[in-house]
Length: 78
Image 1 (cartoon, rainbow, N blue to C red):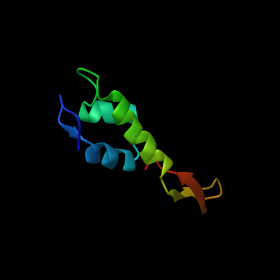
Image 2 (cartoon, rainbow, N blue to C red):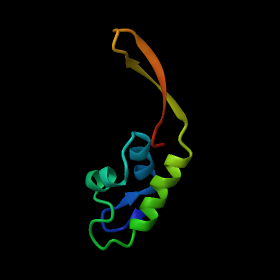
Image 3 (cartoon, helix red, strand yellow):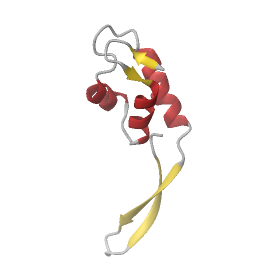
Image 4 (cartoon, helix red, strand yellow):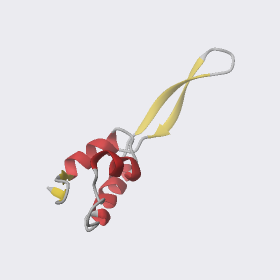
């Protein structure tokens, strides 16, 4: 479904960018969503919000001070 008619941005594009870890401001800058008339901003923000609420918890490998690595839980954006 097209969310932003001015820039022809779909809900799938917004979701894909949110899954890549981008927040609304990043998505707005990248895709131009809600930068012209602004009528789509609420819907676009809702999509990003829903995506972050349903995000699985990801395990991230981090380096410790001693040079070893450990796994830390972190929630992703979508």
